[in-house]
Image (tube, rainbow, N blue to C red):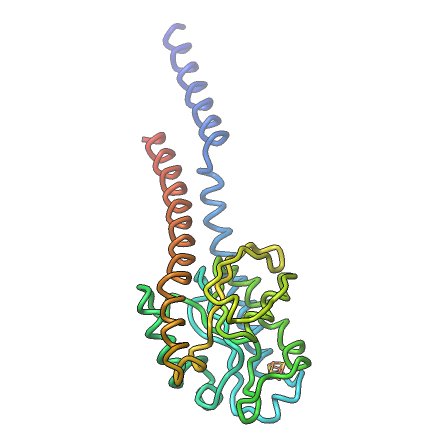
Amino acid sequence: MNARLGILSSIVELLNLNLLIILISPIENWEYYGKCVIKLNEDIQLEWSKLVKEIMNCRKCPLHKYRKNPVPGEGSITSPIMFVGEAPGSKEDETGRPFVGAAGKFLTELIEMIGLKRSDVFITNIVKCRPPGNRDPLPEEVNACLPYLIRQIKLIKPKVIIALGRHAARTLYSLAGLKWSSMTRMHGRIRDIEIEDIRIKIVTTYHPAAALYNPRLKDTLIKDFKESVAKAVEEVLESQTIENSKTKSTQRSILDYLK
Ligand code: SF4
């Protein structure tokens, strides 16, 4: 009798323990969470391919008549860091890739200067097709193309956006419902904004193309990257490391508990 009671109490203890594990730990959720992550990534990838296809076939504004290739953007779609310029130039139009000309080479150097690689970030523009003669995109062209950028932001959910040039900065400020003044006053600023309920740090600085032939602007852009961009990126990466280590420590304690 005592032996049976002992076995029963052990079973109850085990059941309680399992119940306790299920109640207090995300071990079940962990698996579930794992499946969710995979599913989420698949969903994002599907949504992303759909978006790229739409951009490649887009004729929503007159810029489609002049382009050789639309330029949706490139880089990591899971990156917390996004760079947004104004519009593709001639090299970008030829290749279908963003920031590949002289300005792109300079942007790559700036990204590497703060310890990142181009492949660590996502790079795109406000409008995805090249305006003829490299003119500024017209407001109606920006308005027609902006939904694509918004969808990119919603899929990538960046923690920091670096707006390159006044057009990108002004457009993103206005998307966040903020007033833009001028790059002379606003360059190097870090601001917390919200776009589509996503909280993002925005850093505004000059476009690398504008700085290429102007040594004073070039120095300012380098300074903005070394100070503001590096600071915002560091803060974001630090908070992600803390989040990751919190998740890892929860997982470790669950596994320890099961030993
Ligand atoms: S600029 Fe944007 S809206 Fe205009 S045709 Fe290209 S992808 Fe479409």
